[in-house]
Amino acid sequence: MKETGLPSGSLYPVLARLERAGWLRSCREAIDPGAEGRPQRRYYELTPDGLVEARRELAVLSEQLRPPGGLIDKGTKGKRRRFVPSIPEIRPLVASRLEAVGRDPMARLFTGPRGGRISTAVLRDATHWDEVVVRLGYEHLRRHDLRHTGLTWMADAGVPLHVLRKIARHGSLSTTQRYLHPDHQSVELAGAALNTHLLAGRTASGPQVVPKPPPQQHLRIVR
Image (cartoon, rainbow, N blue to C red; front, side, top):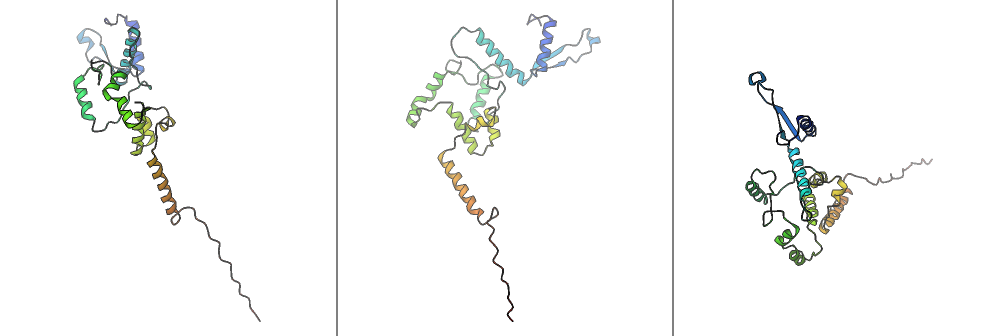
């Protein structure tokens, strides 16, 4: 209360609203008020979702107080935490970066050459992007296209569409479908699978042509 400079009549309603929103959780101090000679204190701490939202709001406030120009920090489109899969090859690198930044909640996991943001120019130069895409013959390729590629590879690996939507944090399955781009080989394999299914269906269960019964033979008695 002293650090905020707000009276209790203003501060506690704010804390109650944040607790109802799921940003905070609280508990009462485990003491005997009679023995201590004072009322119990209530302790508050940020929830995991509250920590994410607090970081986002601090970034927005920092940007508002910063002079015009430069890069900005933005939250995710859904304004929520994201859980993404990682392949074993990159986990040691991520673990080493987590150990390096320690427990600072505002620390950047990856930084630029001077310890700040990784700008577009820094990323382009560090990955030699322009030279690589020209050498591959894909001058039109954008870095965002790699997101399409990753989701397509996961779909090819058998990851269900509804799981891909959750990984990409898309609002609908139709948005995720627009990120999937099967290659020519996948289309050819689909055609081959259909052909195999149709050939098997001609001798197995499935719709069949019912043959007409042979004409009945009637015996005629000659006297």
